Length: 381
Image (cartoon, rainbow, N blue to C red):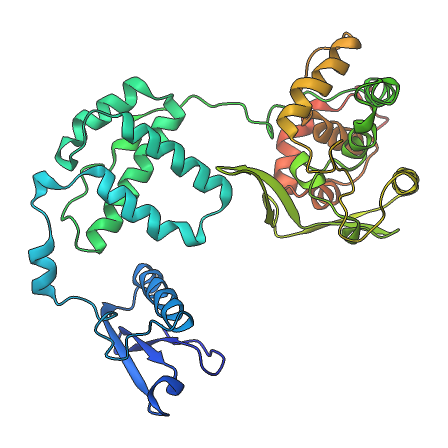
């Protein structure tokens, strides 16, 4: 791998004869070019480790704690590493897991980190702590954790051990292949649980929200979901700066994390997506502007408190109340997305165009929605 050009004065990750080294800023050494050998082969995993080292040095420079002898940043020689490896029976899963998570965290999405924290809690409850107790750990996981969560935890434990092997912490991976022992039934997700509303049901739901004393605040939000087919997480993140009279740019989402709701850049399946504004949608947006603080950074659909809408609270309180009042079969708010796609198909909009609008592949649209179209009359051929 070749080194990448960086701005002047930065630390550069370099490769010489397939060995990684850091090229340090000349300004630190009176104009003299200085390198720090990392004693590691040039691999994808080792480059991530090297990036951690760069962040450590940059932090020391910023805080005036830089070690000009470089001793603090030099890797330990192999003999020292061998002597520091704990005997096999003394290595605990929790120790490896903690180091592995520290390695993963800088590039970890909020939702993924939330899963890691939950998995850590599972490991804390497990009575078997040592790595050679992998068979007992496997048995405990299978008996005490939901099947899909158990499989994901075993996948991560195997990945953790592979990382530990690469870093000379252990020599074998006792969790290799154990996740394959768990067979999952195909579970229904929001994306494939398709049960759309009819046009009459859609209009009745929107009207019921508008007429409800407690939940009319959400009427525009619900109508927007039905008119765009966007995911709720994308809609609650929308700001006025993302909207013009001609198009809407979805480019961020609000997701759950360990610390509650957080905003993340990018969408579920793509970085951003543009949706055209038709006359029906423009009328809705103009109506919203009349009663809102119309500033570029303002939320288009804030909660009654002016914050992000909590989709779980919305579903359990407002949505369930309205659906029950109409005596409809209960369906989740995500069905607004499936309703839009189904209606677009019934209106003979092309599959590639619909896929582009909602951020799915044409194949997903074709395979998932073909059975939901209500046009059943035999065409003239």
